[in-house]
Length: 395
Ligand SMILES: Cc1cc2nc3c(=O)[nH]c(=O)nc-3n(C[C@H](O)[C@H](O)[C@H](O)COP(=O)(O)OP(=O)(O)OC[C@H]3O[C@@H](n4cnc5c(N)ncnc54)[C@H](O)[C@@H]3O)c2cc1C
Image 1 (spheres, rainbow, N blue to C red):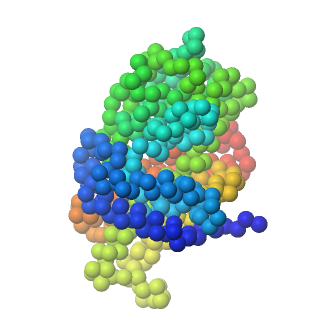
Image 2 (cartoon, helix red, strand yellow):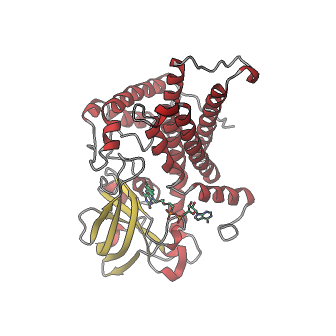
Image 3 (tube, rainbow, N blue to C red):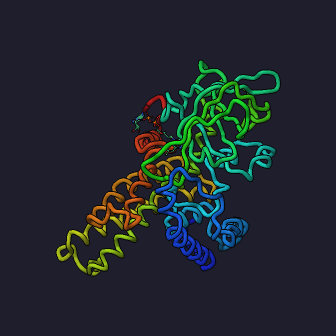
């Protein structure tokens, strides 16, 4: 029987320690800078990272070997243990967009080879639809050997940095989700234009942008997965596209949890300076309110981490994780909101100053409960899975 195993071997622990060292350098030199200078886009590879960018590749090459921590679980551990989240500038921002996840899940082998090495964003959300992604209005129709796309896409993460994006469009709105397809549209394609860059509360080092597609023509072969037929049964490619989120939602939960863990580390260090520490041997009757809140904060982070590890362990062992992914995302969102608030509160007045990064972690982590399905939407998915309801039964 396959037992749950979240253990990490000595080598992988060393890599996590190395990433910790890098994260400290990034925090010292860049984190606040790009939070304040949101209009600037950081280089794809930071100068300090030149010697480090080999690390993720090296880790991936080791994956699958006996005794090596499984890839999804390892990546989540790094997000949480190294306190990495979207608010943290990556060392190597050339890879790892949401569009890349869709390409790997849905693209043909040729498409994966063609675009795999480039950062791809994912453009689903439109001015008239967000949570209800099947209501998209962007259209695509075939004209000879080209698709012609028309519509608007908003809130695209990495929209500026990415080399291209996976754009969701409908072949025929009257046919529902069976007609929804995704297309690869690369930057520089005529008719595909940047409309706006957002200025945000948090995750300011991650750009968010809006685009307009006006008679934008792309080759017929750039339909992701290549299946042109409209699915008769509701689902089709749409179902597959939604399944991409089973891989990415735990990552969003992990990122939020990591950011709050970072805030908690600051709180623990600052309270220690004031002589406040949790004595785990002491019973609740002897603990102060501050100590109780610290315990609560740590417990929330730990429970969120466990939901993430459970979802990624299922992915690593090839088991369905639709329910667990949404649990990890919803719990990560809860902890991001509640834990961020608590961390800032525990720091007292300095909590809201720029003396510490805790206030930034608080702002940055807020997104955890918004994109890739809001908290409410993930709770709906959880309820449907537990009750064996379809989306038409519970909406
Ligand atoms: C910084 C940032 C980055 C983003 N990146 C991307 C990206 O890369 N690609 C992309 O396509 N989109 C992206 N988004 C968009 C994001 O996915 C949407 O904002 C999100 O899906 C919610 O959609 P909405 O904003 O239209 O809100 P709505 O869908 O209008 O929802 C408004 C409120 O109603 C609630 N609600 C909606 N439906 C229900 C329901 N059935 N039951 C209960 N409550 C409900 C929601 O939870 C929410 O609180 C990003 C957004 C932000 C802020």
